[in-house]
Amino acid sequence: MENKNDELAYLYDKTVTCPVCESTFKVRAVKKSSYRILGQDTDFFIEYGKINPYFYDIWMCNTCGYTAMKHDFPKIRESEKELVISKISSKWHPKSYPNIYNVNIAIERFKLSLLNYTAINASSSKKGMNCLKLAWMYRLTGNKQLELSFLKNALESFTEAYTSESFPMYGLSRFAMLYLIGELNRRLGNNEEALIWFGQVIGETNADQKLKNKAREQKDLIRALQKGNVEETLLENDDDKKKGIFSKFF
Image (cartoon, rainbow, N blue to C red; front, side, top):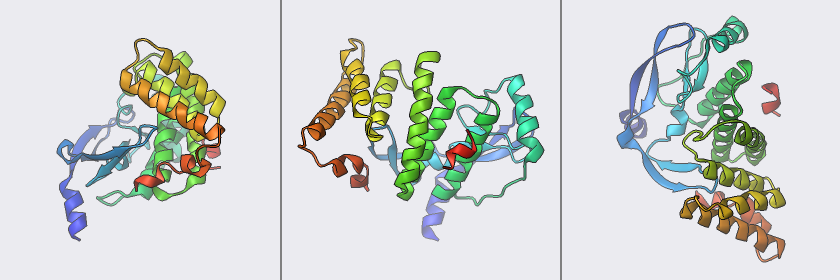
C-alpha cells in the first residue's frame, strides 16, 4: 500500500481534448520532478527509479478509440481522422485501467497505439518508435523472443524513415539515428550491417564525440566477438546485467 501511495504521489491528471472526436478526457501523467534516471542501455532505453514514465507514454480516447504516443496525439491530419473513425471507432469498446499502470498495461496500450498508426498509414518513424518502446517493455518482462521481434520491426521502420523523413526525429539527430540503426542491427545479429552504420557515425565530422565513442565501443564489441575474444552470450544479454503479435497489425 505504501508503494502504491508513493507512485500516486508521482502522478497527476492532465486534461486532453481528442483531435478526432473532440471529447475531453484525463490522462495519467508523471510529474517531471519524479523522473529519476538510473542508467541507459545502448539502444537508448532509459532505466528509471521511483516510477517508469514509459508506462504513461500513450494517450487514449475512450470515446472513439484514437490512441497514440503523447508526442503524436495532437498531430493528426483530417484524412487520418477519417481513417480512425472508419477503422478504429466503428469497432471500439471502451477500456478501464487502474490509477497506476504496470508493464502489462503499458504493453497493451502501446499495441493499441500501434494498431492506430497502422490504420492511418502513419509514418515509418512513428511505427518504428512505437515498436522500439514495445521491445523495451518486453525487455522489462524478460521475454527475449518478443523483444527481438519488435526490435526487428523497429529496425525496418527506422531504416525506411532514415531515407524518407526529415530530422530531428523524436529528438534524435541524423547521427543518433545512424547509431541507433547500427545498434539495432547488432542486437539482432546483423553484425556486418551494424559495422557499416557504426562506421558512418565515426566518419561524420559533425557528429557528437560521445556518440562517436559509443559507435566505436559497439564496433569493438563486434570485432572482439568475431575474433572469439568475447562470449556471444554476454553481448546478447548486455541489458540483463543492469537489473507473431506484430504480424496482427502489419
